[in-house]
Length: 87
Image 1 (cartoon, one colour):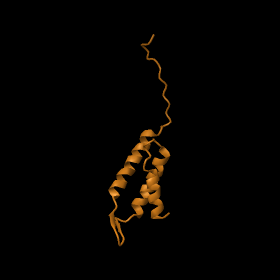
Image 2 (cartoon, one colour):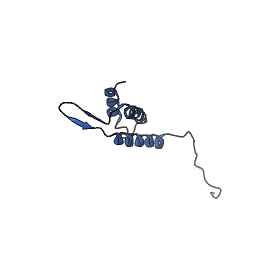
Image 3 (spheres, helix red, strand yellow):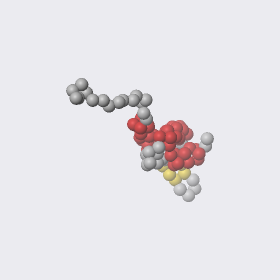
Image 4 (cartoon, helix red, strand yellow):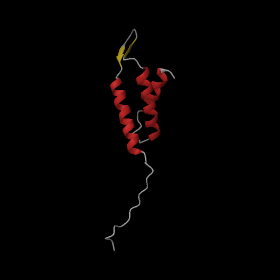
């Protein structure tokens, strides 16, 4: 996977929370990890230069992880029932 592929995946999955989609959030986490491992701190060519915000990607990855954790069922099913005081 090239850096361009990873960038495309990040952009495609960035809106995982609107509407809420766990599959996109999980894909964003994977792409963010790959991006953090492979991206340079800055990039430039003859006509422009750009500083890449690694902290922003790391923060968004943490947000995606929290989003997945908050929206994933633990598998526990609880049934509401009246207490012993109910008649």
